[in-house]
Image 1 (cartoon, rainbow, N blue to C red):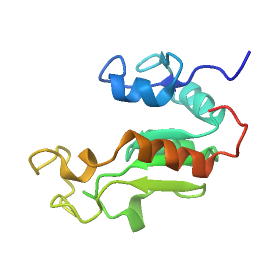
Image 2 (spheres, rainbow, N blue to C red):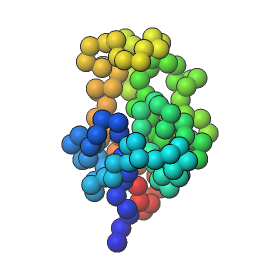
Image 3 (cartoon, rainbow, N blue to C red):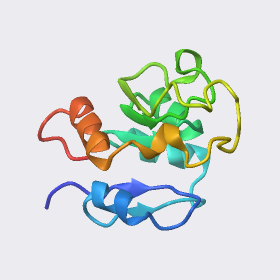
Image 4 (spheres, rainbow, N blue to C red):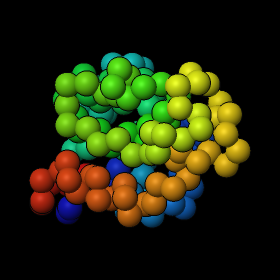
Length: 135
């Protein structure tokens, strides 16, 4: 039957085509539909999680799920990257927003993350997930 479809939790609604294309089968969107404990269980059941530098990245690390983090450098990665599990950080850590602690991007065009290609995300997942394991 193959692996289950990936789960997407996004406050922005259904995944845009890029995320859906990377994900493969149609994802299930659980945004706003889980408790913290339920989200931890979803993350614990994943082979790998692709997420921004937000709380779910740290929750995934807490349950030892490998993390590909789309990490905006508004805070230093050395201090704020997920800890305790295999992690790949994607994003330009020297972008103009570096160290600003901004909640919204102060640099036009989001240069720290716009250069992250879907193929880079797939390659990062491939590095973290053993061959043959469903994502």
